[in-house]
Image (tube, rainbow over all chains, first blue to last red; front, side, top):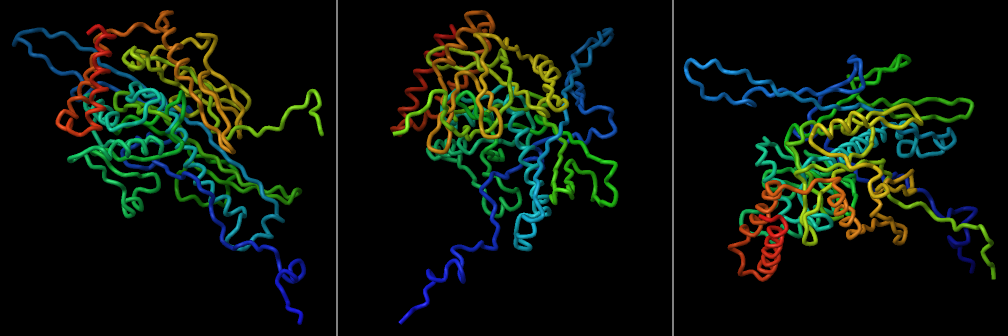
Length: 306
Length: 188
């Protein structure tokens, strides 16, 4: 009796392996705090300003200088107005993927890598680049808490919060930590008692706030990102109030962009360019953005062991 | 048996580590840390990353323009550490995707397919000690250190009513000892 075996059919009637129709994304940290209310102050676009750099102006008004008691007939002296500025330079971030027609046409329709899917993917790449800018910017915070190469602890967290309170920083408070820092913090929090409980993010809250939201502790919304820089044996996170970080954009308007409808100004432009002689589609994303610390006193670095 | 030929180099994958731009170090006169029984300056980085803190981009192949950012750091009260101090402090390491600029006390080491960052804490402490000795960074005023000492005192106070717990008692004992050393080193 001759049994028809799969192993006997392989090569002619059966395949050793087939491709599953599902196309899954590789694990990546796609957290972004760009649009989290209070995390960054949006200073708009540099379009039509004559510069790629936005100078944010500050003036000591509305109580910055307090009145002083004076006698009824004193000729009081003048007080100079305190002013300052901070610069946000808008730069280009970009990514390009080329895909040949053959690579594209052999894919499964609706669930494969093709020019359209690559174009959609550019949104995540843009957000990741902006997170890089944010994580790099907070490295330059003027004051910080934590001790070099010592694990993050509840004490460091309290120190950061105290620093903001001493500086009279108004909320809401946001913290951006590396997941390693957060893991160390949780270890430390577990030994805390009383009302010092951590409120972890629930599924419903994550669905509102997006990936990266870890929870809230003592009124601070905590976000995690693997983009938080590692240097000198430490991770450079930060905790801050509104007005610490500023962001500015550029809205690309290529003159050849005819026949394309855009919903409104956007810092991200994705174009598909044909190289017909090479039978290849080039998918190019260009984003224009800049992030700066605009008022140092409103934030505090959180520098702890990597 | 195949013997390696002279001049051959091994094929080694670049480190799996994120690229990072060149950076300058700055010191905020109010930023200090107590480590190893002494007060050492805490240093802040200004990465030359276009789009960050006022660092401007330039055309392809040209260096970025950090001038605005450097001036801004100085306006915020930071003092720049000379880039040639101690023979320079930035090293370049080739990584997947480009180059990582590291502090010279940081090295990348391969562990399996991953890479880890090794930090020479003693070397970094000596580097900062030299800054003080050479006058690159001014010695801290006691008034600057006082808030940091108060912070340590607050840590101890916070645990005062939990000293019956063995792990808290142990931690508190270490904190009290550190507080004594902090005060002695700060002359307050």
